Length: 272
Image (cartoon, rainbow, N blue to C red):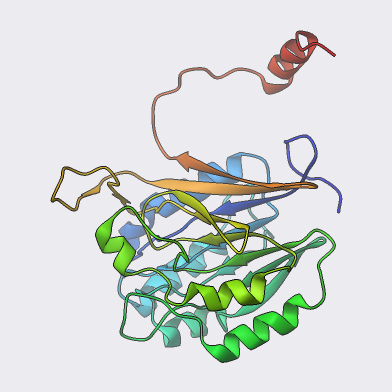
């Protein structure tokens, strides 16, 4: 796969926008539009991952708003593969009408992205059904040249926030049994509304921050708190590793310099 990112040696760059919680009101898409514009203004991603809770309450109009944005004329994103996923706030019927089945395989050059629906209708915690695990195991029997990224909504990890911890993926050991020894290089999920990282079956897990608001992971003792602020993230696949990076939206510029000039200046000063 020919590198297409600005990072030297990177094989693929996956942009991640999680937990948009769009409402029927088109104005609720303002932050999403800002996030997509930010992504589009940078290096073109090889795929855009949307790991669930696309709508706030499963409203059909919310998916129409999202589809219109994704199909719109945001510079830099035309033709980028989109990988949407069900979250616990989504409704299967409207989601399927807009995007098709939530379990899917998307190829980006030699890298494979597998989206797996972890939702349980009527509940906020998650589970992957035996039939899904069987399908996943069959898919993974053939390795991808650049490896696989698995996308879920519910993290298969504990959370430091008690409320989020209650709503995590149940029976992650069953998923771990399918993934052990496979070519999966990273598991990407959302749901928690806070960035996090861990591992399952020795595979890195990235919990993407949310677009709508963040859960305070260091709230005062005895309190649960959500705070304003939007963030996206990215995963870069290299030949020997995969790297996840949180990207807050907003903030004043501290420096803004020509990248090529600064890299050349720094390279000259690095001992060979």
